[in-house]
Length: 400
Figure 1 (cartoon, one colour):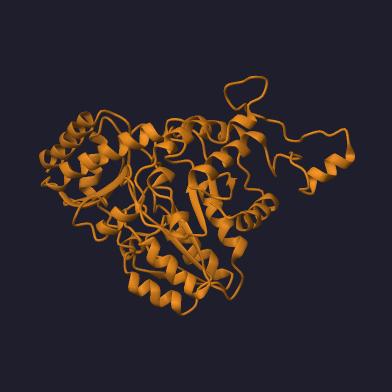
Figure 2 (figure 1 turned 60 degrees about the horizontal axis):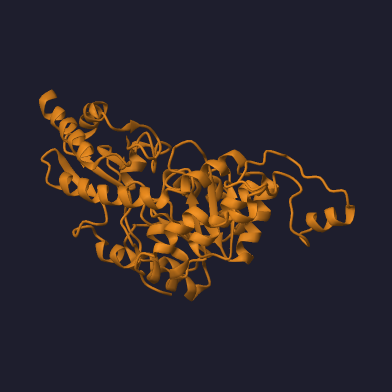
């Protein structure tokens, strides 16, 4: 297991070129969108070899597709994995991965404030299958280690978390899981493969909602899982039978979006850091959540395992939910929407975005205040974003 490495400039090149050349046909400079549902073969023996995995090729769109495969190969290279497989959504990637390996009577250890959809799987769906789930306070590594030691089949981590951007020590928790033979899954959506590579720390699988920063343009749904060939093949088999397949048009949009991932990531991370520093001292703001801050509970861990701190932060307002209702409509340069990671700045409270599935009581138990605003930084000029925040926050005072 290794600790944080300096930013690798070759990754910027890989976002543009990796995984594409074999899929460009007829001299095209771009990977084409292959919409065909099925693929034809004149030779039945060759068809059989492809169908049984003895030869390369495609037989049916629910299984594989050339455009989709190019996206998977790009992600495999960026995460430094042996294999990758894709899904129709990020939640499909998460749920399929969990259901591939879990059986009744087994045990999962995770944290309380994972993404709301993930939390629902842990709190509602897995217990229905007689799977024991233990959710620990994020950042309480001693508690997590103790729960893992009691018995664990999968340790599921999300770092940074959505929406409070909490950090988990990957080195430490991978060691705890390894001691009991548990698999480690890490949701790397907020970090992107440019800012963090969980496989380098010994994780078994890394998961992304490709809908977010990877695509970057809020126009394509998708998910992806990267890891060892052995584990990914098992997940692929579950997915090909259960049918949560990525659409080739979505794969094309994701490939196109990822060509600017490094440019977007650099701008969004730098802007996020500057905006956070502005908000920390603002009288209308109660608390700011972002791992670059020295008083962030796990700032030192983030420094070790992340190259940059990401383009997403959140903050709570002293005026509560009524303040949020007054503040958000005043923002000029922000989409009020249940998404993040786009070129446009996107904002929303957890109650209508990441944790809309949860009740106010459940959100409170997860440490997510109703006054919290999730702010996904776009690629706009940072001074414009700062002025926009300033005038919207000033409106709260003037409206009282």
